[in-house]
Image (cartoon, rainbow, N blue to C red; front, top):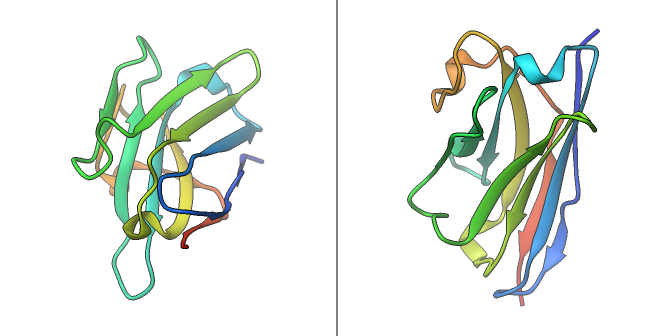
Length: 124
């Protein structure tokens, strides 16, 4: 059974930092591209960042470019989302997802496996 678990969320002040982790089990991790998505209250889920399964190619939403960094550790079956200079508008539930249909994908419909989400709240 494939399982993805996102953790590392919490309450942080504007300008602060958090590191989210996505731990995977039940799959051959290096065969999967990973994406981070988020859903704020009253809004649709949106893509935040993704990383390829092959060469570490990454993509970021315009709203997080220069502030967030995604990277993976295949030896530990984990993907991380380093979030810096957090803003109130980053408040959301963050989900990680995995897919092996394409080397990398920004479209959430491509993703087959989803974790349960972790809450990030940015507030003073």
